[in-house]
Image (tube, rainbow, N blue to C red; front, side, top):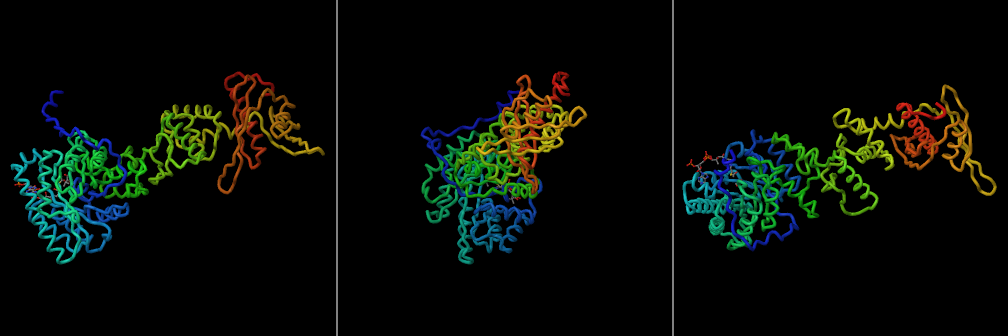
Length: 573
Ligand SMILES: CC(=O)SCCNC(=O)CCNC(=O)[C@H](O)C(C)(C)COP(=O)(O)OP(=O)(O)OC[C@H]1O[C@@H](n2cnc3c(N)ncnc32)[C@H](O)[C@@H]1OP(=O)(O)O
Ligand SMILES: CC(C)C(=O)C(=O)O
C-alpha cells in the first residue's frame, strides 16, 4: 500500500542559495484583495445569489477592503447581473476598486468590458495557465503557445481599455496571473510576465499587478517564498509591477506561504475570509491580518465584529467556521485544562494589577475583546480543569474573589461534580456547588440573634461586645463576650457555650453587588482541633456580621464533615 506514493513526482525546489527572505520581518500590511466573491464563490455548492453577494460585498467594504474581486462577469448571466447591479445601484464606494476576472480569450474579454461599463475604478484581471503540466495535458502547447495567449489577451485588453477611458474616463488598471505559477519553471514565469508588461506598456506610473498564484499548493511554504523572491529579483522593470500573491491551501500551509511570500517581496495578497475557496481553500486573509495584529502591525482591516462577519459568511456561503478556526472559532479563546486556566487567570490578574500596557496573558495570543469576543467564557470547566479555573468562573460570572487558600477545597468539589456528571459544568452549576457548600449551612449551629456594639474608655481603648442567641441541640443559647474586634468577641462568646478549639487564621472580604443591592462577602479561614484548615463564607449587608456568619459556616461545615465521616468528637452536638 505504501508503495502507492511512488507515483507522485516530488516538487523540484528552485536553486536560491542566497535567499534573503528568511531574515525579513513583516512590518506593514500589504494591499489586500478579497477574492471571496470570485474564487470563494466559484467553489461553493450553491454559488451566492444576488442578495447574498451584495451583502457579502458590503461586509468586505465595512472590514476595510479597498480591492474586491467581484466575480467573473463573462462566465454567466448571474455573474454579469451582479456586477451590473453593483454599478447601477451605485453600491461601490469611490475608494474601492472592483476587480473582475477573465480568461485571456477574446470573446470573454469583450463581454467583461461590457460588464464594467459605468464603473469608476476597475482592475481587469486576466489569466492563463502556464504550468508544465497544464501545457502538456490541457493546452497541448509549448511555452511560446501560452505566451501568445497571454500577449494576445493583453493587447486586446489594452485596446478596449483605451476606448473605455476615452469614453467614460474610468480608472482601469490591469492584473495578470500566470495561473499555476508555482508549477511553472521560474524562468518561464518571469518571461511570460515580462512579455505581458511589454504588451500593456506598463510603467512605474501605471504599474501592472503581477499575481503569482500558488494555484495548487504543492510544496512547503519556503519553496513558494523562494519562487517569489527569485521572481522579484529577476523581473525586468520591476518598478513597473506590483507583486501580488494568491496562495491556496492544499497542504494546509497557505497562511505560512502567504507570510513567507510577503517576506519574500509580495506587496499585495489575494485571499478570502475564513479561507473559503477552491478545494481546501484560499489563504485566509483574516488569519494573516490578525497574525500581523498580534505582532503589533496594523493590518488595516477591521475584524472587531468577527461574530457578525462570521454570521454573514455562514449565511452567504452555507459553510461553517470550525470551532478551532484561528481567532473566529467558538473554542479558540477557551481553556478547559487546569494548567492553562491557572496561567490565564494569573495573566489576567497581573494585567489588572500591574497596569502593563502590553498584552501579557499566557495561552491567549491576543485579547479576545479585540475581535469582539469579550462576553464569551475564556475558561470553561470540565474534568480536565483545575482549582484556578473554578475560582476564575466564580470571579468572572458571580463576583466572588475566593482567597487562594480556599481554591484547592472548592476546586476539588467542582472536580468531583465533573467526574460524576461526566460533562462540562456551566457557570450556574459551579455557583450552585458553592452555594450548597458555603451559603446554605446553618446546622448544627444557627445564629438567631446578635448585637455588636463598641465601648470606648476615656483613654481611647475600644472594646467590642457581642451579644446574641445561638441555637443548637434543639435549644436557644444566649451568648455574650467582649474582644478587641467583632471576630474575637464572637470567638469568646462561642467559648462560653463550649464551642472551642478553633483557631482563626485569616479572613478576606469584599463587596458583591447583585442588582441594586451591594453586600459584603467574608471568607473565613480557621483551623480545627487537629490543625486542619476549615473555610466558611458569610454574606450580609453588614461587614462584621458577614465575618461572624463566615465563622459559623466554617464551624458548621467542619462538624458536618466529621459527622459524615463518623468521627465527630466535639463537645456540643
Ligand atoms: C484557478 C482558477 O480559479 S481560474 C478561474 C476559474 N473559474 C472559472 O472557471 C469559473 C467560471 N468559468 C466558466 O464559467 C467557464 O469555464 C468559462 C465561461 C470561463 C468558459 O466556458 P467554456 O468555454 O464553455 O468551457 P471550459 O471552461 O470548459 O473551456 C475549456 C476550453 O477553454 C480552453 N481555455 C482555457 N483557458 C483558455 C485560455 N486562457 N485561452 C484559450 N483557451 C483557453 C481550454 O483549453 C478548453 O479548450 P478545448 O475546449 O479546446 O478543450
Ligand atoms: C485566477 C488565478 C489567480 C487563480 O484563482 C488561481 O490560480 O488560483
